[in-house]
Structure formats: structure tokens, C-alpha cells
Length: 254
Image: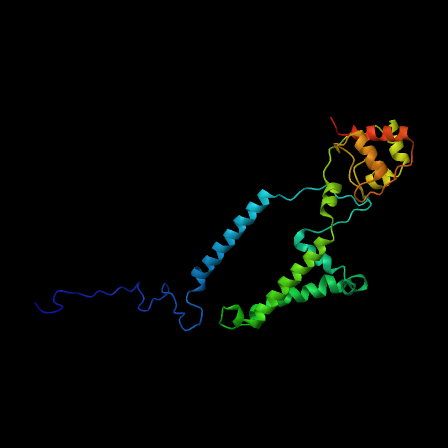
């Protein structure tokens, strides 16, 4: 039997002779690049992002952000703060070179230069290496950005009394206040209203609705002070102090 006898070769015009669309490219000549960006590398990036997102969602469920009262521009002593991821810009605007007459520097120029540098980092350093030590420009820009954001956020957060702020801005239930009562008359005649609000909802001081304190405890605070509240704020008689303490203790206690 002769070699090739009985074999026939049939050509198909639908199959290209050099169809290499589904053959991965050879990246061996590029140091550190041993796989195509799509889909191999991008799939790993998506997987890492999904793991981070799931972890972040677990943290938000375990420790949800507290809600505060509705913003009221007429409330004295209230200091508005941005969300935590904008605290570094909030802190930047406290410095003389980025506030006042130079507020454009802090709101437009400096953030524009910073984010512009991060945007241009891949174009400024186009080396084939993936090691951070071999990418000095991109690595330096990223490290400086992380250090600046971390420092400014830390400085902004360290100057805020978070416990007092949460107590001051917590949501309180609506309670009908008898403004004709003797206790409210004492409350309005003293200096209480300037710190705790007309309806005891809180202003520069905490709200006085639903404190859970007894009349004796309220009397002690009014006389001796507590926290940022100085002593001897109450200037009335013992009878008025008794009326005031019973009035405040009865708010929201039902």
C-alpha cells in the first residue's frame, strides 16, 4: 500500500490560513509581563476589587454610620463637617495659604495639581517594569498622595470631639413641651436656652429630652457642671432648681 493512497485533502474557504485571533500573544520578551491584559490580568483585578468590596460592605453592616438631626442653619454652635473621605480637604482649608484670600489655592489649584499628577502618572512613567522600585515616578507620586491624605485626615479628626458631637446631633423624639409650665419658665429665664435650644433640642450643648437622669442628677449638673459645661450656671433659688430639674427629667421619660 503506497503512502498517501486513498487520502484526500479538502480545502475550506471559511477557515483562514493564518487565523491567530484566539492564540495568546507571546509576552516573554517583556520583563514582568507574562500574560495578556484581557482577560487574564483584568480578571484578577476584578477579583481583588470584589473581595475588597465584600469586606467593606461587611464593615458597614457591622458598624453602620450614625444618623444625625436635620441640618439647621439657625442652630448656634453647630460646626458642619464633610464625610470622612473629604476630611483631608477640610483640613487643608484651615491653613493660611489655602484659606481666606487664597481660598482658590486650597479649593482649585492644589487639588487640581494633585489629582492631575495622579492622572498623568501612567504617562510620565511608561517603563515596562511592574516592581515599585523600578517605577520611581509613579511610586513617588502615590506615596506622597497617601502620606498627605493620611496626615490631613488624621489632623482633622484629632481636633473633633466625636462623642460630644454625636450627643449634640443625635436624633431625639418629638416631645410636646408645655411652655406655660413653671419648669419651662425657669428654663427660659436662665442661660439654659442659649446652649440647649428653645425646645431643648440641643444647640452648642446636648439635647435635654430623654436624658434618663433623675431630678437630683440634673440639679447636681446645674450646680457643679459637667464636661464642657462650667459650674454655677444656675442662678435661681432652690425652689426654681427643683422645678427645673423635675421638668427636664420628665421630658421623654414616658
